[in-house]
Image (cartoon, rainbow, N blue to C red):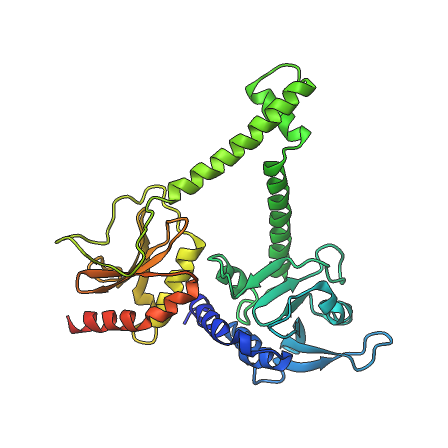
Amino acid sequence: MDLATRLVELEKRTAQHRELLLTEEAAKTALVLPFFQALGYDVFNPSEVIPEFTADVGIKKGEKVDYALCADGRVNILVECKPSSVDLDLKHASQLFRYFAATDARVAVLTNGVVYNFYSDIDQPNRMDEKPFFHFSMDAIKRTDPATLERFSKSQFSIEAIVAEAGRLKLESLTRTELEREFAQPSDEFVKMMATRVQPGRMTPALREQFGAVLAGSIASIIRDRVNDRLTSALNVANPVPVILEEGRSDDPSDTEGVITTDDEIAGFRIIQAIAARHVDPKRVVIRDSKSYCAILLDDNNRKTLARLHFNSPTTRYVGTFEGKAETRHSVVELTDVYKLEPQLVARLTEFRAS
């Protein structure tokens, strides 16, 4: 299985067991170690994954950090764990701060098994930053997360690439923060720059106030229009309802221009792919998006629709499963609800094998 599929499997485990994992040790065993195993580390090899890693740090003797991930005798990543019920805070990272300066590691991870905060030394060499450069959550896997996490895998680990990526992610985060601030309340500089482009002339206080309000409204309108472009099908079905496919209709829609596949659609696809992986090669399960719905196909064959993701409505989401040509739509409140449709998906795969 590729990393994205393994992450979806871990997402399922996290959703099922997180309420039971009230201690740090439980979170380590059930969530944290499988996560690093998914990244290719041999968690049973003490020269590769060192539990209770100890280093003398100044006057602190014998203090431990939960794990050190190593390669070729060199410490690459330090890991500090907390119970899954604990919200992570910088105060939980005190040992990581001390160990970061005392070892060769340039990456540190603070986690509760659900959330993983990745730190480096972007601001000052050999001193761990106070803010993580990458935040990963099992509760909300983004479609870009697997590619980022691949950089931390055993096979692809390169500190130079990671530090470069860390700098890029930090710059992206700062830029996003500034844009959000400008969009919500445009600064004088932004207002002046935009005003000179659309209404040349002297910028009076009254004009600045008027144009500032117009600018904020225009930005909000653009965002609303972009969102509305994606919300092309609003479903108001309260219960699963069978829908019969028209004769000859296929999942090869022509209305794909301008389609943007959302993070939720990618996550839904990965869940279905993970379920199917128990029965077929997961590479056979593909996604094909359109303006109306996201089709999940077997063998990229528009005659072998495994499921449809109807995620475009702002208020309701459905997953369509099939028996023959009949589609039954199931309400999905949380993405983890897709796992409940495993019997229908397995039956569909069995149907394909029999045909």
